[in-house]
Amino acid sequence: MTLRWLAALLLAAGCGQETEPAPDGGTVEESAIVVTTWSEKTELFLEYPALQVGRTSQFVIHLTDLSSFEPIRDGRVSVELRRSGGDLELYSVAGPSRPGHFLVDVASSRAGSAEVTVRLESDLVRDSHQLGSGRVWPAGQIPGRQEDGNSAAADAEEVTFLKEQQWTLDFATESVILEDLQDSLTVPATVQPASGNRDVVTAPVAGRLVRQVRLPEVGQLVEAGEKVSEVARTWSGAEGRAALQLAVEEADIGVASAERERLRMERLLAAGAVPSRRLEEAISQADLASARLAAAQKKIALYDATLKGEAGGGGIRHEVRSNISGVVTSRPVANGSLVEKGGALLELVGIDEVHVTGAIPEAHALLLSEVTGAEIEVAGSNRTIPAGRLAAKGVLVDPETRTLSITYLANNASRQFAIGQSLRLRLLISRSSRSVTVPAAALVDDGGQTAVFVQTGGESFERRAVTPVRRRGARVPIAEGLAEGERVVSEGAYLLYLASTSTSAPAHGHVH
Image 1 (cartoon, helix red, strand yellow):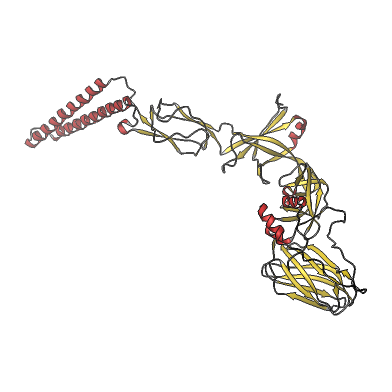
Image 2: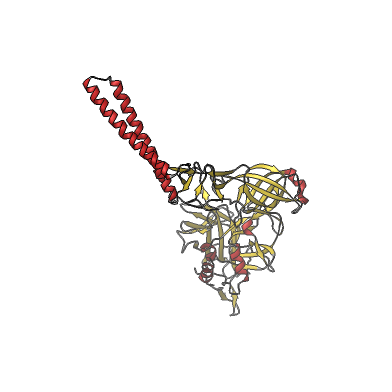
């Protein structure tokens, strides 16, 4: 931003004052008229020499689109001189010489007063500025210098900030307005877990945590339903390996015996010696013997895997998933460790909703009954966030901090708050007051004194010390220093502050 500002400072060069011969052979300073007006759509900054019969006066017109504070880049601009009898003189130009700059030559042949209007007609903006009564001087007469009606007083500290700078930087102005504002009290606050919004993730079975599925770290965000681990079952029986091997061998013998019986029943059934029911019974016994063998083999495989410190013996794994969205606050086990059934793996604090708890100084305890709502102020930003539903109002003064608490349940689905975060809570009070206000961005800290920059002309600004009162959202009430209708710099005020302290400010004027 600073480099762009310096570039803009170098962009505009002074064009100097024109002179014309005086009757005694010397020179006199050419009189000039400077006008700045605002409509709802555009700002007009106009410079032109006094109008004289028989001479062409060039109107240097600067037009700014107030919706974007960018220069008007196209369109026809007209200067109208309307006489008291209804006669109209019209002078116009089809487009700007460069963005925002329109040069209209006016050459009136009739002296006297006329109502002056500047009109803009473009595809995007149609607007007009009524400049009031102007005068066309007789040939040879040179009027005295005329001041801009919007200029600051002669003794005011004026800062020049050219249109070329305003148009190329993040810059905007707006009117000081008078409005009814709800009274408020801003207090420090902290973000805490909502009551009951905690969960402990436990092991569904006894086993070993699978190393390939790593548990989340403390402070990590976990979404509801997210898999956080897998538990591979481990051997937990009392039998030793010899007993398990014996069971395998016995089951293997049982399989062989049942298979022989099945084959015998098939032969007897074929000879008509036994009913078919006997074969069906033999088949069922053979299947049961095979199942017993498979179970015995899984047990010994699970035992061997547990003995070797391996997970997944027998291929039996159980997924572990989180029940809530939250932040991990504790992880009492390590990846790959043995866990008991029901043992804690993670502790989570839910964050979809949080408590925002403010601390009200006991001196303002009476205001607690008048609180009608609250907004959360985000550090480093002018925006505020609704605090949500009131959860609790404190009735006890903390003996250490001498404050009472007030708690709101705030929605945090977008993860804009962090547990433990420090915030500012703006409590809205039932009563209201009427005051002039400016946007918070208009305020500048100038050596401990609060100031704003008031626009007194198209390129002139006055540093004004003001007395703000408690901030109310994005706007700040001003007790002293401003009047309704004045225009203040609402974006780029710090650039004006830099310009006001610079020893190399640009000369006033333009390259036309």
